[in-house]
Length: 65
Length: 65
Image (cartoon, rainbow over all chains, first blue to last red; front, side, top):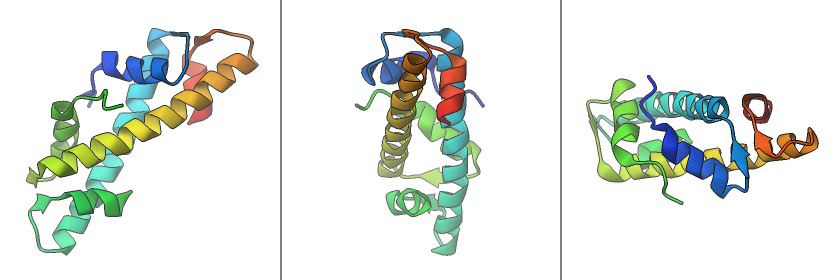
């Protein structure tokens, strides 16, 4: 949990046009992204398993999208 | 673009149970997350503007969810 670093998440928010961003907004965004990544990763793994592979590949992530 | 570093994204995928992950799978996941972050950030900024604030706060990110 909490693998994604905050500084790049903050940059993404600022790049989207925000003048200022509170620290807890950055943390909230990080948590949302990480939850989404976990869901996608589990689904991607399931696709890889279904294709009899142990390696999760790009097409598995795309399929899980 | 491409603000999020790959190593923590890879850890999130491995934490979700993947034994092995290809490099392009990690990049695909990073791109998906970054697109999602951009969409959420734009919507969060709109919520902040709507509340007459220049600072994007946690409640704006939550509202955009």
